[in-house]
Image (cartoon, rainbow, N blue to C red; front, side, top):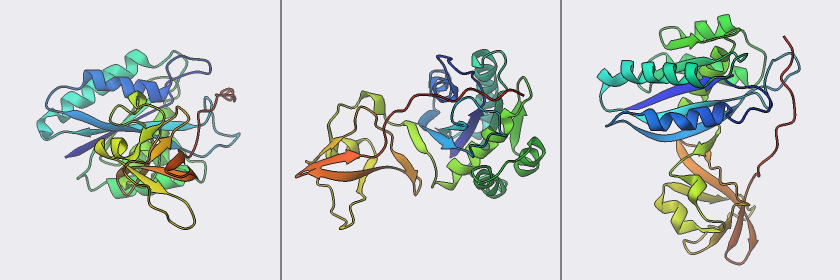
Length: 245
């Protein structure tokens, strides 16, 4: 059974460890037989009225847990990790949900709402209902992004992976077959729908970030020559400071 753990608003501008890295670092704390399947970054609405560090994103850890009795342990470890790692002055929040929880449908709707308009903590609490949602410092505004991260990730159609099958260890370029062996599907966005071959090379520009499409890790690419492809996107620098409250 899949378990989703959402983190948000844990850092400050210029910090070495942001929400994404905090979520990725949680892997070292996972007890057997649980394992992390991936970490997904979710982009929420960017608006001057919303306090955020740089891009108003949150992160969701996807876990495989076959023993529901371990849920409380996982939740406790996640809270300890969040409270230990979040920076003073941040507004951290956490959301925890199993994939079979009936309340996930409402949380998916809430997540979509967070990408389109400004929402409140009250709305996040209402959407989470019987799910586990908690704030851990500051204004606790992080519960909004944490809840949205779980909802969007559980839908299977939003966000990009910032951790999946050791994506930072892949060479550049990398073969389509090497990506497929790790569960990353390469999909062409070319207008003529040419299909990448196993022996083709994908140039990632040193930034391999598959999308979460259809509950799978999918790398969209465009052709750049015979047997050569280029993935979409590239690394960008944080520029916008967090809005004063």
